[in-house]
Length: 141
Ligand code: DGP
Image 1 (cartoon, protein in one colour):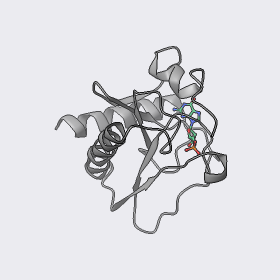
Image 2: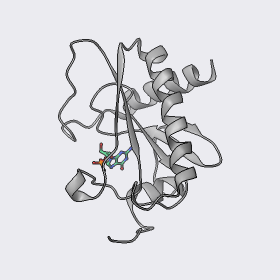
Image 3: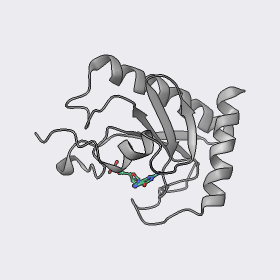
Image 4: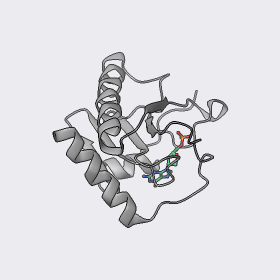
């Protein structure tokens, strides 16, 4: 398997070298909005540890990411009045992974509303800002 590349785009976001719409941060995890959301509130949850995907992450770091994904899922229900949540996580190109720092997709869902196709639509920054604020408020409320 290839090794972790510290110059991947999410590593740059974690280091603050590239911007993002942050939703949550603690000592081991970071969450921000996907710029190409498949539904409003589509969030990516990452470990701060430099893991490429589920194949190389330390089990404790993975467990923490999943705990944070649960918090984001619960907040997504509250913030967006969602009826459900889709959680996705891809590993290596053959597994659908495009960016090689482990991330879990947490996507609030409304009954009867299909997901937009992957990477089909780039959301406006103002809308991402509003959605990140709604999720952050739901997390702290
Ligand atoms: P995947 O590796 O297949 O789980 O897909 C990567 C996801 O990351 C995809 O939904 C689009 C999103 N994405 C790609 N580049 C950026 C970026 O620069 N910023 C943000 N916030 N999301 C990104």
